[in-house]
Length: 542
RNA sequence: GCCCACAUAGCUCAGCAGGAUAGAGCGACUGCCUCCUAAGCAGUAGGCCAGAGGUUCGAAUCCUCUUGUGGGCACCA
Image (cartoon, rainbow, N blue to C red; front, side, top):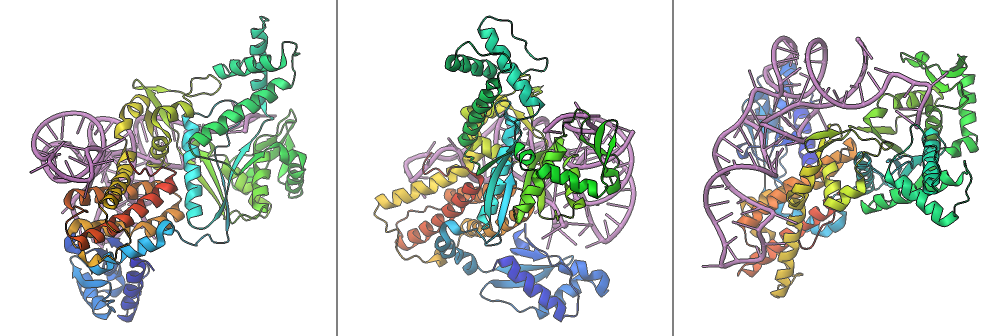
């Protein structure tokens, strides 16, 4: 059981025993040492109901509390009405063997044991290479999946795409036009065609493999393009350390009849009607301010239809948790999907949509508007090639997904040496180096150690932070905001670097040396576990 | 016009289930390697947490309005 939970329970019981009715007992880490290690503002929240002064309430509760003297050294009130806990050094010291024993399972939980989760992300149609914009989606999705796995979920990483729409048709036409250009014939380049160089390369490959006798409108152009681009996308993802378990093609839901069934059911509920030659979904009946087109007058369904069928399919596959990673441009559309599912009587409570804001790219201080079609994008591969996957992953995860972040390309490449991710990795590398060094000095890694020797401020501060890891992971599991992990690791690394500058690990005092080696071993475990969740390498040396 | 998100140091951003003195990196300036990696540590400068109201014992954090930015409001996805 975690420290805060223990204190929270004891505080709640004490308050009840004193005749108060506490609602939510919150324990926070104290910022100032003179307020102990942990504090609660419980008395302040009870003032109104109790009609007593907060200090009086604090005294009363403290009088009732059952002190666990294995953990707590002191409990005392402070103005205007806080209850402060001073934690014993022995408690923090006991974390060392606890962490070492848990090893790579430290920070894990079984919250998701025997549960399944589906994380759908990237889901870019294969019309071109992945861009930096997709990068944010990819990294968030993969990290969220890692977080869920850390809590025991069985996670499916899923990529949803559509190779039958307008975009893909234009893609095929673009390749076709380049093919005929290569043959010296006038290609009819589509008006909204894809102008990137990769289109020409695909055309060249087709020419090399299939000769020059292909006819216009041969379906080969689109098929080859899709295949080539998908291969490129998968390679880009692998370069970032991401692998999908499943690719789902929108076409499936037309072919297996799920879309027809879905339309029939909505019709039976009178949520579908015809107007102006199109078929509409009566969203206004479900509380929205306008109805949506489901089937265009051309007979083509809009993306909402297969999207909804796809989500129903995911629900029917029985996942305990369904997560979608969407860009801000979907903010307005996914509620319609949920609405339709609910109208069909399906429970959508276990669907979590994570929206991330767009990345604004800056080059030479100027904004670049990205468009795959116009080929003015910066590819994910280029970025990864320049600054490494670790840096890219960290950059996208260290910011909240709700922040509209500016990505200055010059700065990113320029400062890659000073990137904050190295700060974390450096801590890990330093520890590894000390351990290696200790081995060369003949220090027995299995030696018995006495953690009561770890008494300096920087040692205890380091332990205190290391011991917060499981708690942080619990929070992140709730919020699904990966940057909590990044922030935490920054703090842990800072505590380590501080410790490093103040305490020598390898000393003449063998007992102290053993204790400190155990300490840094435990810190190394936490760093490695955290970095693993972020999908970032934990180097032995730098 | 309507809807969603955002606004914190010169720049990029943390902090936000309300808590005690608002943080980091980059940039500027000062110290620290006879000692396990200086990709580090210590310190200086830099802030009316966009503005105005409100709720509260207490607001960067919650609510309202204003201003500014991004995204949406398609028979595009």
